Length: 84
Image (cartoon, rainbow, N blue to C red; front, side, top):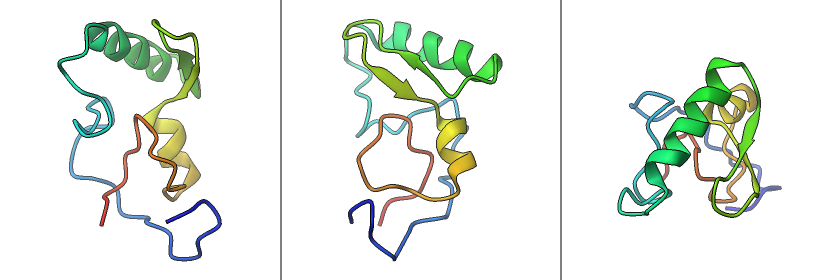
């Protein structure tokens, strides 16, 4: 499913927004705890994202994705939506 696909996923996953899907963020990563910490800080400060501690890339929070209202289909790290 691509970004412009009309069949959008709108059902949130049955997990807390602070908990990423393991197929999107591997708990075995060396920076896993840092990523979770940065994500939690960004969400508590009502920011839309944070800079990845290892790469410096901008990463949207689960709350930003949830506020969007649907999955964009790009495989985002903190996507809060159910996958088919």
